[in-house]
Image 1 (cartoon, rainbow, N blue to C red):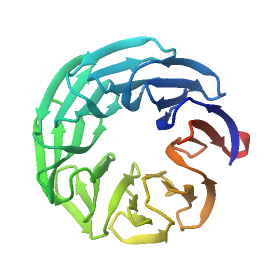
Image 2 (image 1 turned 120 degrees about the vertical axis):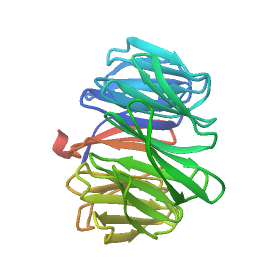
Image 3 (image 1 turned 180 degrees about the horizontal axis):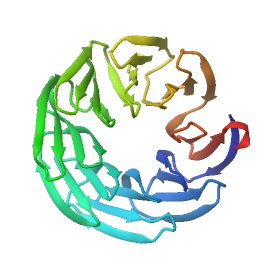
Image 4 (image 1 turned 60 degrees about the vertical axis):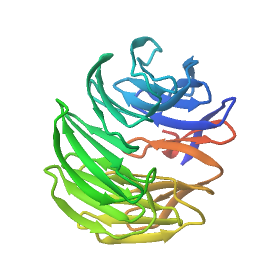
Length: 308
């Protein structure tokens, strides 16, 4: 991969997302929108805590409880005040799912709240698939629940898992839900049946391909795993520090960052690219043609293969 462009923001980059139209970066007190050529198209001074792509634009959830929707030109399409600090937002089609720091799951469409669920506990993670919403909710110090909701807010099923507050993560594909916890990786069918549990320890981040063929997992002890649909370890790597985030392409290319930088491994486990540095956030295009990296020193960098 080669560097296509870079820009320097004032503060460290907390999160980044890349879409077909551009790149969104979240820094202290502002969000920035760039096209793929590196032109800063617009910026908005909001204290966002989480961002998500939304069509050609983006969703931003904020410290003050506001959820914003912007198009790719920076025009505010709608906003919704949920009254509580936003922990995470995610979006699919015209629906936005917001998880709050006080344990609410709120579903929003075009600025209107459709329904909300009061978990009463800490929400570790949420994920969305058109007309389905999944959440991992901590029940106490050592146990939690995975819940799946339909479009009306009805709980389709919930399942007990072993976890620790603040440490579970999940991802959702067309038919499967994967959950990573400090006590293992779980795979569920959409009907709630547990397919398997692999007792890998210290899992911090998970991701699944759209067809469920590959599952990526990263652990706090620096171990990086690629798993098959059946839960078998395809390969394992030991990195120099804790794996913070993992993503996986449908072809099985595994992307992760740790305290030393970012790594890309092919489906066989061979290292095909790396970036050394203090990576605080990253995102990839589905075909891995581009990678955007945000650094703790405020640098935002876009990479591509062969300059494309």
